[in-house]
Image: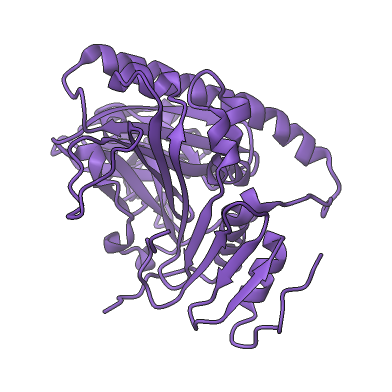
Length: 57
Length: 349
């Protein structure tokens, strides 16, 4: 998907096509995956100290 | 959820505010709205300081309001200019005057500290006052807290189930969304792009498309009040040109203003602006009636949900899944704003 918001502090979550997985990209460039939006947001908002992988609920 | 103060809220359509008195309660504060003879909108607290009679149930005399109970008379700045039977006007005889501005066919009022009101912070919905678009609109009172309407609008997969036969088709619920949040600017953007979808009656009858469609839904929410749904439909396979031009696409800008009235009621302002069939009154009537029906379907569902939520113990567990990614972001942003972290947009170079 084309990025629609172009600010300096944009966090993105893409629902990976054909799966139930979410791919989160922090504005700092860190990338993580999760299969639950609560865990995905928690991981993104932990910036700048992103856990190694999002917690499973 | 707590109210978010120090923000602009839509109080009315410009067309609703004239030389009569209009009462609206916003964030629990009763307001009276009117327009001066010179055309300026005015918003005052809707309670006479004397015995609290609603000024909206009173009358205008020139640009002043004369209380319908004992005649206390207020100017556009809220100051009392006349009291009955005596010369001295008590120093405290005034009602609050709210910062007010008109933009994009709406009358906006600032709820919060008046000195913080900055009209440049009012988010835009330019299509509503653009000659290149034709707009139909309305407002439905909702007997539910505003957060339920935010939840509803941030996850459009409910269209498939609640609005089947109008705007819902199976593809809406079946298509994954992408979510972006600009933390500085305070914007939540949720995209659902359906490349080969059934055309629901809302679009088939308004555009004349008979086959399957490309259907893009791009939500742009600017908490707390303004919600935009950028909607594009076209016959399957028809995409915008590389330069962004899109002469074969049909564009509808759906605008909602979500204005909390009380803790358990909300004004649901809705507008549908289109760039096609602009002079076709039949299309205007159809889109107005269809969208109002859809809004009333939401109102009926959310009114029921309010009763359920209001009876639940605090902190009752919910379950969120992928479709809720944008809605969760909206809840978080609103919570932060209500806790005193208003997002004042910063300039981005």
